[in-house]
Length: 218
Ligand code: C5P
Image 1 (tube, rainbow, N blue to C red):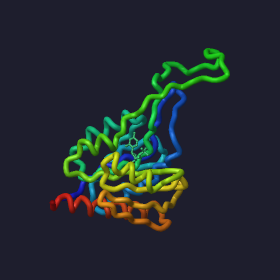
Image 2: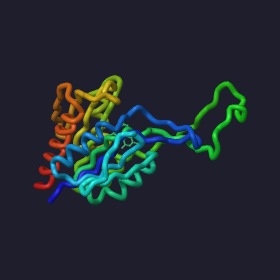
Image 3: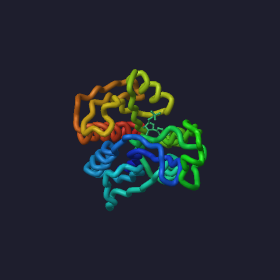
Image 4: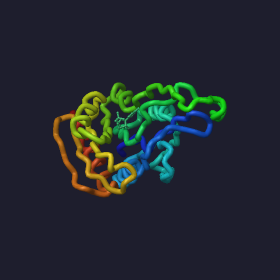
């Protein structure tokens, strides 16, 4: 039986008004590389894709669900989690969203001040939701940091109750290559050399399937 993999990919977008939004520089390349590798290994894939321009084709074994915001992404993940054997949270989810989305474009003259304050509220943590509700499923997350990469990643692994975390330096964002460290729930640490995102994806899918097989035989 094919292994089912649910992947989140790319950035989310949080609208301030009908034409402005908060987002980040994620290209969605890692998510696409993970989808391609999973399909190569005969898995069935559902990808919940944020707002990157990268193209992922709907095929017999790959369902693409386009979303905009973190709340949309969570909804799509909730709907598709049950059938997943492995969840990989590769999306760069906006941590916060505007508390209020203006119905019309915010005009300078409407405000009149030199500075304005945008009130933000915390978005749901999608991968945390998955970890809290998982049933014999493998959960893999990503960490991207500008400092203390490994210690922050280890904290995230524990807090988000992940099976594995892929720790990346901030130079990875939008790049074709990365040199991540894979950190496992077991305590094992595997540092990868600088590789294309396709080769990194192969390592991540291989490790995820390996963990899934150990869970299945327990
Ligand atoms: O907390 P941080 O954003 O650094 O965590 C990164 C990991 O958590 C990634 O796997 C990302 O997809 C996931 N995440 C999530 N929902 C959020 C924030 C992050 O699923 N709201």
